[in-house]
Length: 108
Image: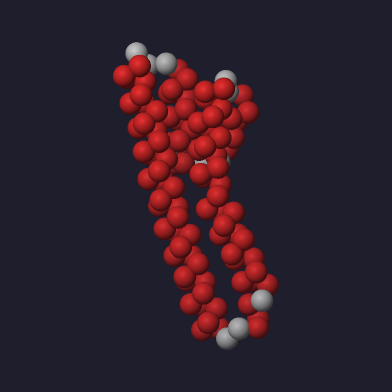
C-alpha cells in the first residue's frame, strides 16, 4: 500500500482527532494526489462549521427582536441541522477513506 494513499486516508479520518488542521497541513505540503484528497477532506470538515456560523450570527444579532420562544425553536432547528450535517460529514469521510484504501489494494 502506497504511503500517498495512507496519508490521504488519514486526512479523511482525521475528523476524529485533528479535524480541519491536519487536512490543511497535508493539503499544503503534499504531492498532487495527496493534496487533492486533503483538500476534499478539509472542505468537507470546514463547511458545516461555516454554515452553522453563517446561520447563527444573524440569529444572535437580531435575537432581541424575537420572542424568546421563537428564538429557541429556530436555534434548536438550526443546531439540529448542524448536528445532522456533522454526522453526514463523518460518514462521508469514512466512506472516502475506505474508497482511497480499497483502490490501493486493487492497484497494487
